[in-house]
Image (cartoon, helix red, strand yellow):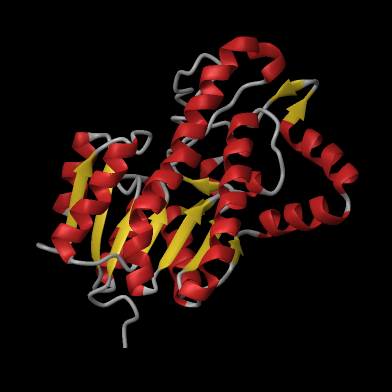
Length: 271
């Protein structure tokens, strides 16, 4: 029996990258999907790939609390329940605090607004419905939620906050039957680095990594869906991700040096 047949899945940031792959994968498994995005052209393109009546896409911004409430209300109006909430909407950044100075403050705030508060808003409004369905809350986090990454101070802060908040909610929900989990894709081939904010709050427009050597979004989505089906507590993907988490837990000083060596060359941030 298909675990997700006729289930209602709400996915934030579902018009691109991992989010889009999740939307299409859940639809292929028979789920009803409600998602959102800010780019109208991407919304139209996604709708053209979906089966009639199974997908609903809203144009909204998860940094606005009332918009997240609208997303949840729309899902209930369209399909009557929410069984799975995937907090996927996210934005990255790249810039050194020592170079960006006070210009970095609004950049960090914007990253927190999307990655952390977007999850807080959506989960808070969806929670009563998830309690009714004994559903699943998922946070798409990152290795940066376990290990602070240079040049991504705001991004790391948002993911640490995300994981800490979800862990607290997970514990609160134990007697209510709601499963709360977070997944960490590691470096995945997607558009997130191209649109990552630089120290001036502008999209950097390029990726510092070799995208063709990274895990693709469809493979990442498949791992996430499998972890949801198995109701895992956490999921850390890629060998590099697992290695980083393990080293940072047991050898944090060594990991500081290895991380610096990975991200810098001749004192310059290269990744």
